[in-house]
Amino acid sequence: MKSIFKIGLMALASVMVTETAMAQIGVPYIHDPATITKCDGKYYTWGTGGSALVSNDGWVWTSGARISVGAAPDMMQIGDRYLCAYSTTGGGLGGGHAGKIVTMWNNTLDPTSPDYKWSEPITVAYSENDEDCDAIDAGLLMTPDGRLFVSFGTYFGFIRMCELNPETGERLDSLAPDINIAVDCEASDIIYNDGWYYLFGTHGTCCDGVNSTYNLVCGRSQSPTGPFIDKVGRDMVEGGGRMFLGARDGYTGAGHFGRYIIEPGVEKVSLHWEADYYQGGRSTLAILPIVWKNGWPEAGFNIKDGVYSIESERRGYALELATEYVRLNAGRGMGGMFGGGAQSADNTVVPFQKLEDVIGNWPAGNIDVRICDYQFRPNQKWELVALEEGTLGTPYYKIVISGTNRALTAGPNKTVISTPEFTGAPEQMWSIDQLTDGTYRIMPKAAPGCSEPVCLISAGDSNASLGKFNMESDDCKWRFNQY
Image (cartoon, rainbow, N blue to C red; front, side):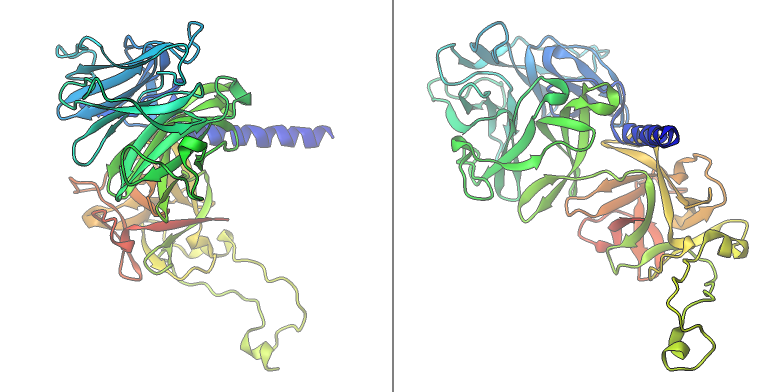
């Protein structure tokens, strides 16, 4: 029993290292994060109480300059200015449900800039203790035709919204009533995608650490003001909502949706986990891919450390080292099938080809990389290891042939090669983003001679190369199948 327990502890430690590497790193501790906003090359978000996080790359986060806000701010860039909406109280904070939603502006998010100064807050909505709404948890929406809205509310009554003036941040019509759009949720946010508006609400219980049951649900409408109907036809104002993201192993309490579009086909959701098991059960920032399926969004997955085949969406062929084919000296073949040859007639298991069976035939220097039909051979098995650098929502990976340190490398003239050793050079560090259709994009941190970003592409059926990303082309898309 002692030896089994020791092995179990070692396995648990290994899982914890892997899972920690797959989460945002640094000091990503935050609650109720605002939608991530980029300013002058850096990423920013703020949480309840004005706690701030800042990142140079979107993967490693540090504490930033706090701002004077109450609860659950949201942030949006409009033109060359930044609009912040937040609540001054409510949510039972201070003993009641009376609260205000306010807005304020800044010309920059960089607190070291001489232009950094928040405007005086403007009240745009409020709630009283005795009404069926709680003015907290602001969520900003800009429609394609330039209309600006803010939604707000908690479990104490309805989720409501009102329209704002996009030039001033003030309420557009002080006499217009707030619009009820949902119930039985909080921390709302609305986004637009392909002709539909999607209302996200945070459902479940909050603020109870590992026992929190927060989860994200959504409905959709062709109007920014609803009604928002879920996938089975329920109105969110009557308690409907389709699951977008619940708990995942080691992470629970998904809440406070925020969308960040990197470019067409590459989207991220920012949120918090109420409890990150791998970081003491603290509330932490999470950034995951958004995948769209049949008009509905789902939270995607980052690639975990492991051994994979990497297969082209273009034809299904697998990425491999361009080495000589080594035949297996086993199996019955056609001779055994028709009575000829000297093969054994028993049904013993044919051993898989092993690395040691073939590596002696591989050249010592660089080896080209190509695409070929998948046969689970050693030259097609790639080990991925997350590194402590990254891009927004995903780490960089070391990609090597399993059992070796032979690294996938961006070569000169947009070629793709394998080099004998992984050195940590930029051309050996790969970001892997899940795309909105569920496939993945693979991009080197840098490629020799390339001033613009490039990604791994299938150049025809058998050639691997580097080229500009195009979401409309399957040449740029890959699948990962884990061993």
